[in-house]
Length: 264
Image 1 (spheres, rainbow, N blue to C red):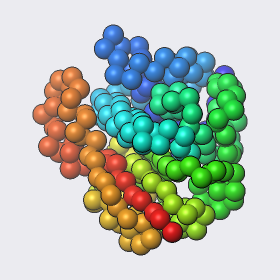
Image 2: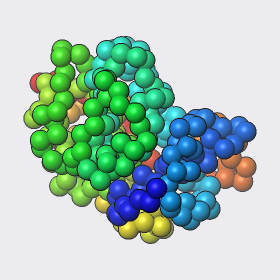
Image 3: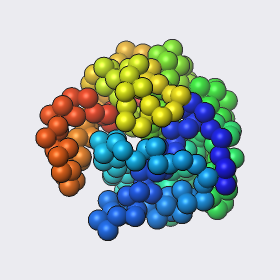
Image 4: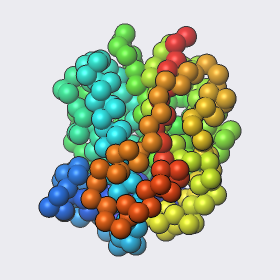
């Protein structure tokens, strides 16, 4: 299957490639065989993403941590509503599903259309073909009195600051309460997409970054930050070889998971 994606949308193929490449390993970390099946069906030059070991392990560490934190939320709230911002071709629902949660995949219309080719319909999964900054997407979310988790991986760093503010305002204007788990880049990575091991092969660039995550609260003071996790804590548990020598530098520059709460 040929796919034509530009800009930020194309970056979903980077994370797909990482999960698929990991699935081919005897010591697979995620063992995401579904991603391997999808990659093999897509006609695209994935080889250009092969040479960045830091990006490969960094993406896996991020996926592991975010899966863990989502599962923790689900364990506390078995019938939760989960909105996945920028779902791409990710298999996260299949990795964390407990058989009860209601899951919403949000992404660009062209991405959702591709996604339909690879994932079977599920009565607990709703696909929303809209941008995260389109205020109407929240109209498709039905809470039914259950807790709400908003998850964003590999999205906010590609937005301009005003777009991030708009997105945050959409959340607090539309819902009475939620927990949000946002994957964010370090501020010094802004405008350095062309130096990144894999993003440089796309037309995307990093536009928004943070230090410790307080910047999100600055943009929307209705939010309260309740957590901060540097993905390097998970990364250092992998068999990194020579890359382990650079862990101090990686820790400073690495993505971080920032967690927020909102109550009206």
